Image (cartoon, rainbow, N blue to C red; front, side, top):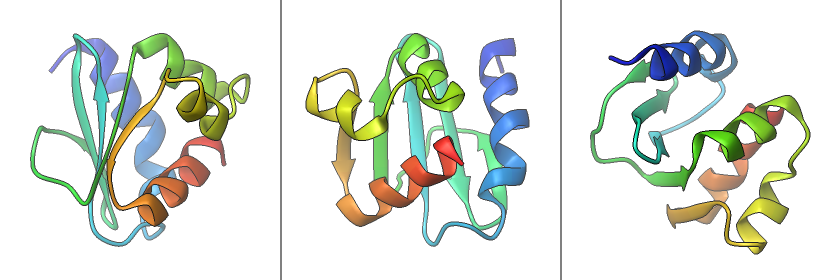
Length: 96
């Protein structure tokens, strides 16, 4: 696992625990994936109910609060596959 993916896991694990139903995947372009579920965050690339795909810079901007996830989606910086409601829940976890 890359240091970058480990940094996402470390940061998102406490935010995701108990806050999400099903599974979500953050796919960081060229780096790897982070899985989120009710148990927290972990590195992995498994099937998920919703997949959010973006470059590292975009995810970092969302996590810092500098980028609104909905605006990132609308501008094409963030791509979403799967359940839209779960995507909104994941964005709340990322920005919370």
